[in-house]
Image 1: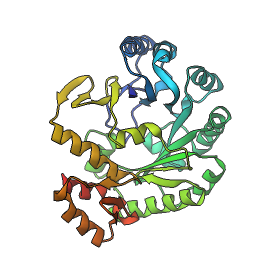
Image 2: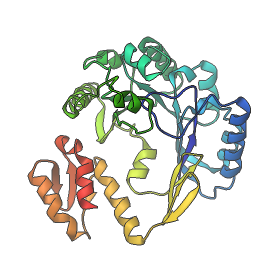
Image 3: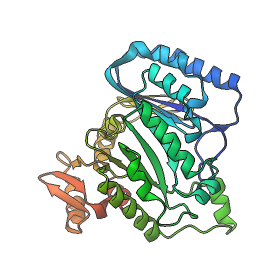
Length: 334
């Protein structure tokens, strides 16, 4: 079994974010939240192969009670990831995470440009993020970062070469999505800022992808790159269609035919379940096995003829061009 735990707390709302979050919550509110998570974690009845703490900023909470509640359920060799904001990174925090069983860190850098970081409301500079990640690497070899491509104020070339010395094991590169309820969306609506073109965003992703390849990180999923053996096992479990528990206010879960969102459950049909789990695989380097779905063959072959997919028997994998339009391919199959 796999576990995702969502922490909605953050220092302030980033301009691009419309996710469920609570900025400026009190220490008491955060402690109550962790206590509730710990009570629910004690009810887990399956060994956990992966655990992922996401946010928000998990390290704004005192995580000790939750670590204690999870410890009996964590299987040997479990991948245990915690997302960190660069401002969360201290020796004390990192040592506490290691003591709690964490063995993988994902740090949200988001941009390498100081002006863009300021516009996003991230609260640190590139140099500060660089120092924070160096400290992370002193405690965790298995560590990576997140970046956002397509933020309006970011220049095309911005300090990528500096990342070559960071010792990255993983990097996620997400295209900016203009969320309807975000501060950035309001800026765009009143024409205070202009989004880059789709082509410009794709050019930026290609630039970053080429650089990451040059430092030994291969693309193993549309938005994710890793050194060999350092792919995120938790995310791969989700994309391979494995079950996962979701705890916390903004968490999603999938167990059998049941889907949960923030604790609210719905049941899907066996047919929907099977298709959903299988289609996710197209996002990964492993590809989509279309056997048993003859209705998929014609559209998949069309995409293969267009150079968007590579085909081996009944397994289809995205090409570099195909990775840019994966959502369109999936939409045609659904």
